[in-house]
Length: 158
Image (cartoon, rainbow, N blue to C red; front, side):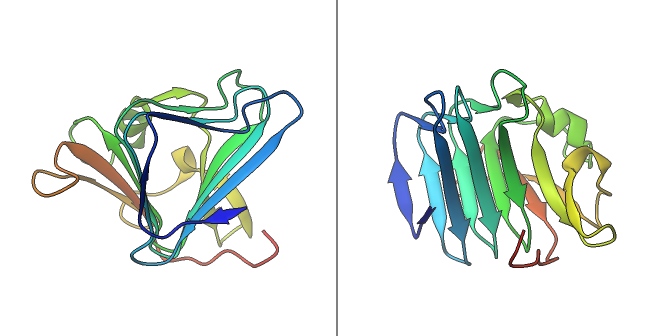
């Protein structure tokens, strides 16, 4: 498992790429960023997890693909102010389905739902309460849409 501080990397990255493999990356803590200049694949033939927590930021300037074969082997888990920024614009009025339109493969982005005590698909979350969406027009993330989950901590055992 890797915990990243400010890192810019890669034309293309895969977490859990090979059959039988397991890959997990955690970007955690305010100021911790992972800027991927190309595509990011979370679970290709293997198992893959990307955890974005405690104000960590992951920015994908190419295509984000989660669980390419839609077989339940890949997830992005977000909690405690985690931020995912994807290149692309849409009306950031809270329509999570539109944001997920920027993602290839499965819509396997999960947030910690404290009301049920487990990870839940972001499609069941409430805009403004569980997450926000913002289109960025200035700075390093200009042209990106940013998904931020609220500050609900997951238990250490999750």
